[in-house]
Image 1: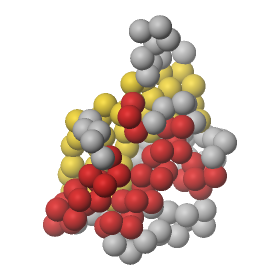
Image 2: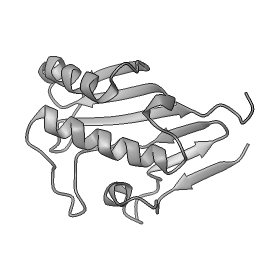
Image 3: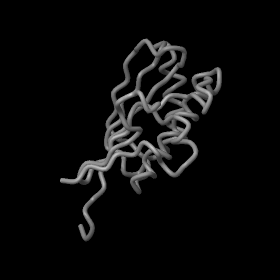
Image 4: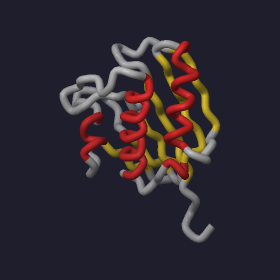
Length: 135
């Protein structure tokens, strides 16, 4: 099984959230037919928080997820699992509406939990499955 990591992706959004060189993890990794993203947060290139509401921050995170997946030729349609971390679990109903707007009819399995997120309202990571060619 080959593993491809993506620290220096070709899309600007992923570069904005690419971990600093001193941090030992990649923004996304492909292992065989699976793509794993690191947790994506709503921060810009200067590490400033994007948006002040759960809705705006969720949209920013989804932009970053799309870019991280695209680095390995995957899309949200390939996602089979998402993990969502909310700084305030009371934001869950509003987050869920924003999530549904981003995902449309797609419905991967999902776990949502409350967590301490260092100044942001939401973090999401994803696992995508890319079917082997010819299947």
